[in-house]
Length: 76
Image (cartoon, rainbow, N blue to C red; front, side):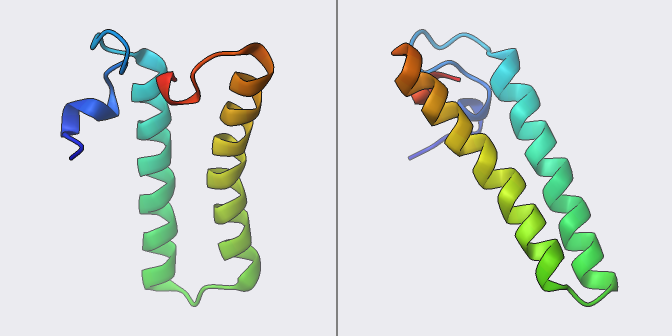
């Protein structure tokens, strides 16, 4: 089971990771903005696709770079 600290901790050594912290803050802010817009206005297909592309592109990019350079993709 994931704990809140796992959102900012490096899984290898348990130290705080600024990369994980700011990535998760960015996703949280984007998600709040998306949900607020969805609450106030009807969602369009374009907006849903843009939100999905931003979230998915980051994860795909991290895994691609990790595979290319031999790093652990979950250690970001």
